[in-house]
Length: 241
Length: 257
Figure 1 (tube, chains in turn yellow, purple):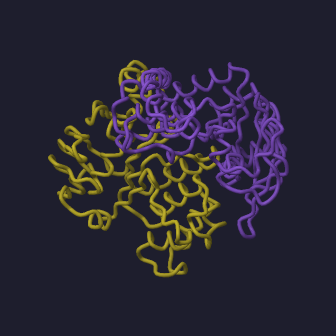
Figure 2 (figure 1 turned 90 degrees about the horizontal axis):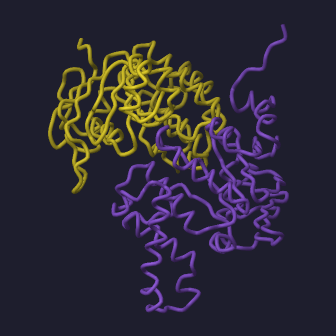
């Protein structure tokens, strides 16, 4: 098995007339949580979307478990056990919370067939998912939709999770639950690539870190090293962690 | 002056009471933070005040005038300013064009003066100047020629605040204004809110989950829980209260030894 679940080599992405990614090099180590940091507009979300095939890389190579996935369609990438939580959450508003979960739990056709232990775990992490189980997901509040989006990604065991700002709009108690959940997932061997502005998240969970600016990765290393080096934090992020 | 108040404000969705009899007054010169668990009714309360939703019962008043019968746009003209979550930007126009339109609207557009093309043209320079000032204030001047649809999320949020400033309302309503911004970018918005606070005539309401922001900016905190107002007071007292510690921050009560 490769040491890295996912690697990007010199990945370029164009969106319409705009050249967004300018040769992204990134290695995501197996069983670790990698934080993707950087200011607004640095290319973090575009990187996740390009990995999922939602934007097509115009140059470069993306490998998942050693297999070239650069040109694969999104459903095929997802079927390789990759889950993606987009920034806009992608909730099906007219479906119930249960139906949203069922779509994500590919092995189950009814709620009874879902892994009940895993479901109970999710209910405990995010109580509104249970409370509004039979309600249309469109009626949930912004933060509750975010909980549902993450719940969908973790209802089945996945090899790789790509998550775009999971803590956005969440009450502090729920953020703590989420940090615990990711720590548990990591302990079970899941690899996580996380875009997150919440510095607490980064410090408590990050093993490795990649910092992006202007469409490239400008720094890659361990979170510990970055957390200890204030000068580096200032030069890369313009702030102290 | 802009004294905003809600009286027994209530909305039901079917059997669910999302906001339940909230009575509260907001004084000029005061920043009130509204906190509570996800789904507590914070955004719905904002929607009832700004007129996006029609209350099942109760009243919203501004300086004693009942706004209950007014539409959202009429309430905006009456002085209620709200930063929406990205819904009131024109995605295909540039940053500068968006702000200029807001400045124009605030000065009284064609609907007030008749369609006088000469006055619109002769104002152009003044409008642009004011739009520039606002963009400088939110640190968006370098991006003024960019099309809004291409901006990253955090910049779109800054632009929303710029539009709100252009309207010069008496009441400012912010719903998580720094969501999607990193710790280096958020201070621009927080400084702006601080400046608004310094102008003692403005009434400011802030929905915010980041407790460091709340601690720093709020003069007062109210807590919503299941649609009901459950706590109201100065920040230190409210943050220390059991309902905030347990239901919101998730800190377990200390067990008796």
